[in-house]
Image (cartoon, rainbow, N blue to C red; front, side):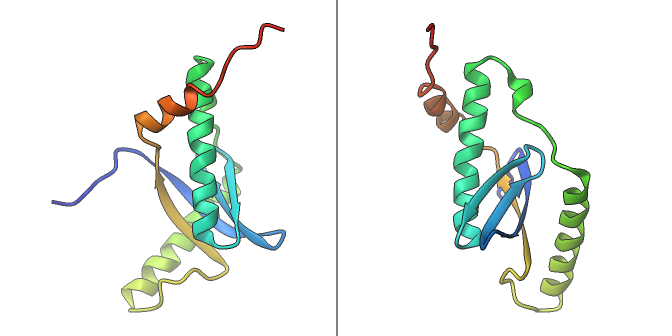
Length: 122
């Protein structure tokens, strides 16, 4: 049986200011790193924090905030190019751009992050 994730966020990777940037398109969040994988790890942490904070504030509408449509178009183009390259037996290594699907963090990770926030009644 194939493992299927319920919900994934589309991620576009590109170079920005000398390092990899991983942009979560549906959330308009970015992660950074020296490699695309490091940027994905940073992005995953940001996603977990954002979702945990939204739940803490009881404002789940804070979770999804789509980025500029031009990035969605670029993602689709890069993804299609990658599919064609892989179908022809080409390299899976990222080039100038990379794409990924990142699963929404699991509930226990979100709950743990939510517990890190506290109210400040100044």
